[in-house]
Amino acid sequence: MLITWNEFAWAAFLYGSIGGDRDYQALMQQTQFLNDLRTNPTHLQTEQIQEQLIERFLNRWKCRVWNRPETARAIVRTLERLRFHLDALKDLEITTVGFDEAIAVDNDSTRVSEIIEHCYNTVASIGFNFGPTASSKLLHILQPGLFVMWDKDIVERFKGKNENVSNSGKGYRAFLELMQQTGKEVSRSFYASDLNPLPKPDDDPVRYLSVQLGYDPPKTMAKYLDEYNWVTITNMVRVPPAWHP
Image 1: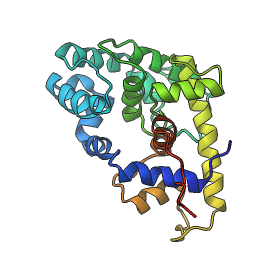
Image 2: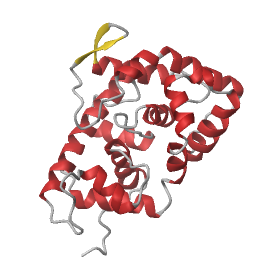
Image 3: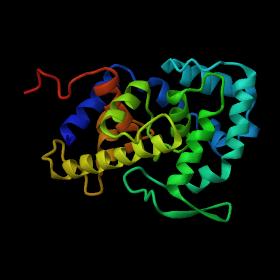
Image 4: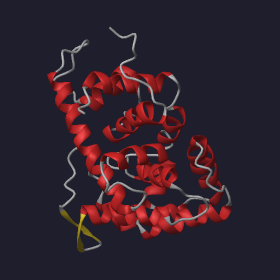
């Protein structure tokens, strides 16, 4: 079933109206913390990771990650192991990424799909109750343009649509491929829609939504895809609402 721009925009509006983005936006404004987390995690103190990442972000979404110093240290070790892999993915976007494309990881040529699978499997093996929700959320804040967050309900829904989807590296990559298709569908619908207010000449769906909903910094297509899934699958809300003409 195709997703229209109208449905997608309504989901983003409803998500914001119930305050679903508060903790996310608060974290995304912590630019120095995020830069260190992405490029130099050993520079961060254990207490910073416990407070800003685990307590104020992951566990606000009921990830139930064990908020202990050992957990924070395990996260740092994991991100250090993934530093070259994540760096190779830093400019990729969900709607345009070539999953079969070969890119360099520390001077070795590796397919994008294999890097994604390796990143997910490595993060999912952190331990300390790091489940699918926490794993995808950590990956998303590391590379917000590419990684789409999910939870158990979303995993199960998409597993029913595609048997390759599962809580694994390969299964998460299959999910991202579905998300790419959805993002492209939404973009095509956006450009074919009669919008009010009119988009600017250089607007795309992400910039337009972020301006209309007042997000600064702007969100990514990967984040809006998560919001659509969370509204319609995790919370089973119909978009547009039934009262919408």
